[in-house]
Length: 338
View (cartoon, rainbow, N blue to C red):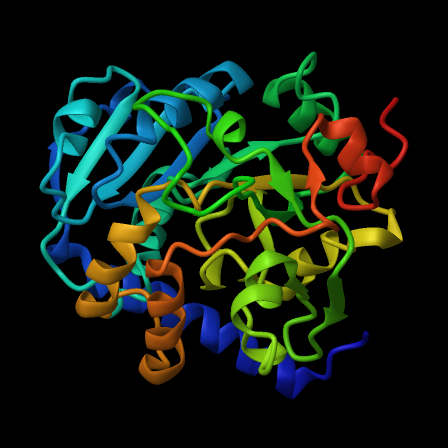
């Protein structure tokens, strides 16, 4: 869609304001172990904000190391479990800490934008949550180096992904999970077909809703269901800025590189392990903290529902087998990368 000069100017101004906002937050994060001097010019980077993720992080780090992430830049939001020790002792992790509000920092994006301005320029970067595992076509045999080489060859500077909610076969609090386990083994089920894909006019970002959360918790208000489309892999430029989590980015032309089922651009999947058994206890805590949502009434009910440990499995649930299955279902595409 052609963009008029006035609209283009407003979006440039918005991008500048997001970057300025991040710069003003520079005093909110303090370095714990800054190893960024070791980052090579060709390094693939991963950015994240975390809080109390000691059970997930061992597998999360291992998974993305195997895929080819060279260095992790992580902001810890005042964890009171083993998260700081786990991250601070890793040679390929640079760690910052902050006691400030996650919500007031645009749900952590101000802190990450600042780090991206400082360290991400010209690097391929993954921006993830600790409950997200990135996979791409051929990921079992071709790592991120191979993937980004192919993206560079195609001139594709960003790669989108559907955030695929995984869940167990019974009540949320009945599944078994130990620190360092593969979350997919605990949460092997997903919804394969109940998704709505729309293109947002203003930023031209793909907006996807559906999955078990829309089905189980937002059936009467489907437009309120969580957004499942993200643009987590980007060849970064210091002038870029995410707008809403990694759901949309400026400049807006990058958003067009996630076209979902259209199949012109290669896409990936974020395996979303939100529904590990700890979610039942965490939901009560996060409802009280109020740091993860804007609409307190709506999401208060959502957290209450999750805390009741429902069963998300239904007779239309699909068991995960691999990336080829996800491609066959139209949830990801290799767009001719044979």
